[in-house]
Figure 1 (cartoon, rainbow, N blue to C red):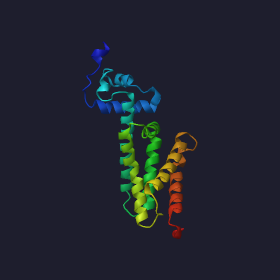
Figure 2: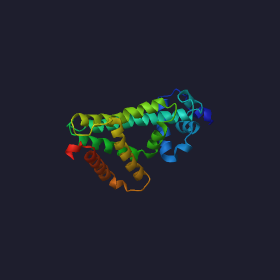
Figure 3: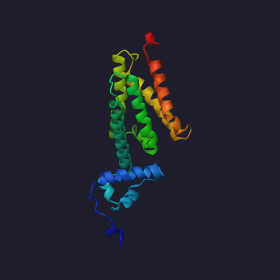
Figure 4: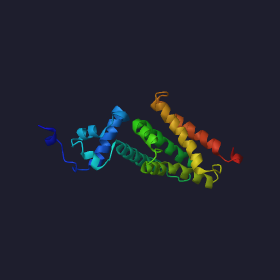
Length: 205
């Protein structure tokens, strides 16, 4: 049987979502350098031209994958924080945020790498916007803490960046094998505790 008869037409089901799912599987297994539109088309059983109905080129596919990753991450961060019943419990909410991030980043190491390398690429506007929406939540938490007098005054975005840089560093060390995954939660707890201790107003230290 020829390839033509085995392949499905480009408009079957939700081709865009199938391509993104297949791309994420390929990314996890083979890495970003091995990912190609032609291979993905073959894997899901459509013609090699079909993916271009949704993605002009490989870069467009990677950007879409990074954007969807940030959307998923943002939803997980939001859910984790919202599950803390006491909206005034800043330590618990920050810990929930940090824990949700490191879990996502360690369970989806290759995707997280793509997300982080794509968000500042010139022209990747949608990726940058999705990243800002996800991480803007930490600025909101910082601002809430400042309004209640629990944290020092200052730029919430800049202060939140310190939290993000810390959990990103922990995640990178786990993903690279420098530290054992079993230490992840303990390190996050220590990081959040130390951040809160250092970020308290001077008169509360």
